[in-house]
Length: 234
Image (tube, rainbow, N blue to C red):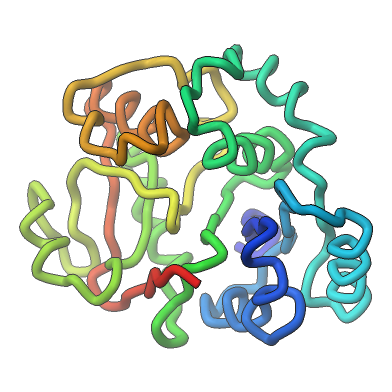
């Protein structure tokens, strides 16, 4: 399935050095035990774009990345494609635009996103299992491992479980595996009362919009039961 999946993550002013001056990004990719078709970094909201791009270029030359993207160069294009009003984010623009640009530019069938401050706890193969399960049910729109080793919480939030997955509602921008065509559509202008649980400071941010769309149409998330990612703010 290597030719079917893009890995992507993003960086901004306060975290780009963690990704581009250490081995963290290499570990983020490798611990998924998957040979990705593309490995992309989206550079968003940094002070010195030339400096950050120069470091990203070194990662491309070494093969850790296949490419990097400056988000601002495609932001307006992506917003127009998705029919999203920039003012409508109400404070959530910088929490959302990188993810939207990444989806807009994705050319593979599946897209795996990790936020820069999320990484698998250990190395394990979950991507192939998730894709196989998603292909059995097109009402499943997203997959992720358990978050922060909270296995009981993931179980309690699910509607039911199978051998490998908890199945239920919910969406997080910390980590998601998606079928690209599902998300390269004008799905981001819906509201749902349950989606108001997201932090107020984020406004009408990307993950809130996705959660509303999924709940409104009874679309599901699968959570891989046998491994966790760790999300910890830098």
